[in-house]
Image 1 (spheres, one colour):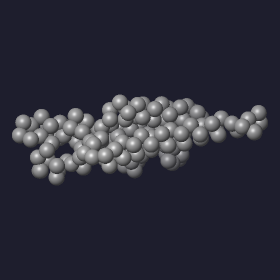
Image 2 (cartoon, one colour; image 1 turned 120 degrees about the vertical axis):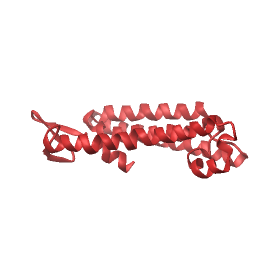
Image 3 (cartoon, one colour; image 1 turned 90 degrees about the vertical axis):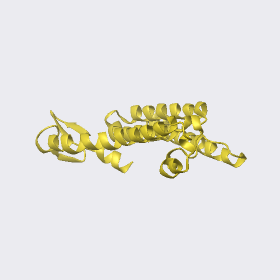
Image 4 (cartoon, one colour; image 1 turned 180 degrees about the vertical axis):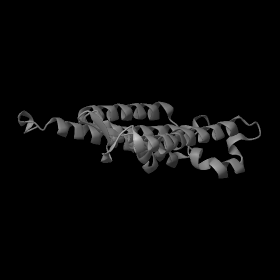
Length: 185
């Protein structure tokens, strides 16, 4: 998450008058000179490497091992190398860690670029992302159930998503209730 935030912040500019300036340093003009060089050298490469390539490489490696006919993801060497990415999931949802990764990337992108949308729109976007993630988690049912104690993983994931959604919804209600008419609400 920290690397993704840093990668996205290179692109986050604010409009001040007729000029855009880097949100992290309002003395740095956007899309010209030094900022343009940093965007092309660091920003694009960081986004490609950390946001696009790393999850894609993990997916390709898992997919390649899944397609092998000699034991696929159950081989000891594969479990040792890549088990961190798929060990808790069913065989048909071996890729689920990537779903969680894209959820995190989306929330991080909304935290960096969302303030430009305004607080209410940013909140609505996050609520929508969380609702989609809750739905995917319920429909996907990705966790491997070896015995009854393993059910806790799915329950904790859905519970944490509901807590995030409820917290965001509560915050949006508090934010929307700041006018005089809503004082007692």
